[in-house]
Length: 260
Image 1 (cartoon, rainbow, N blue to C red):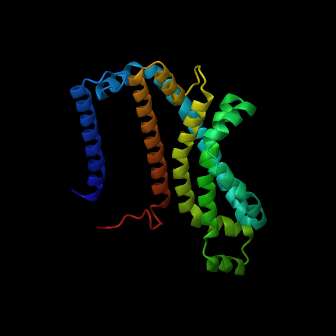
Image 2: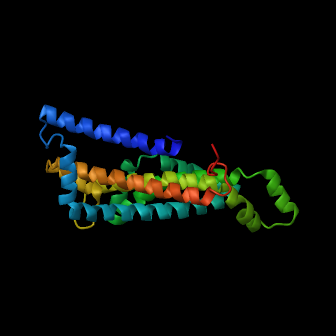
Image 3: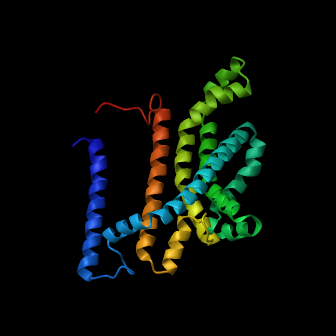
């Protein structure tokens, strides 16, 4: 079996084994569904409650994508400004670190006081996803070979040309790595904010659906919502990894295919 097939078969085998063990534990011990539902019941609940869960999934994904887009735009834009002005970097970077290390679950109630509910949820998703993009892009821009930068300047290149033709392409791998991390974090931020908001209504996301199911002891629906969240996180990571591969596969060492 080659390495690519093994990378697919090994986790699939672990997943199948885990589901079988889960099902056996429930059946052998006669555990009732309100304590631990069997895998089959979770899947049947996912199908029967699909209309409810689908609308909640769309609400959470909308917030996640909006938070990620804002984080990418804000993180890359601010990193470029930091690279062009050391004074700006030294003045603002510590506050970005403070924003990152402060738990979003502690910030969410404050945001819900001052902002409309949807804006507060979006702000939480942005806060969590923003820093990896900023930190990685700043690192990439500051790590450009100084000899190449000096060569550009020696030939009369402007600051814009150095940035556009040298620094941004060189920083692209770190930038994409930050975006890949930010994708998952944006989903986490949206879920945490939705739980803090604790709202009801058509726009409520999967986090609210999980909390509601817990209050009603509808544990199979809770597991079904958690399953959807996991699948959404995996899909986001896979799409951003694909973007990383497509952007780097022709020229960067980390993505170039090698013969065994």
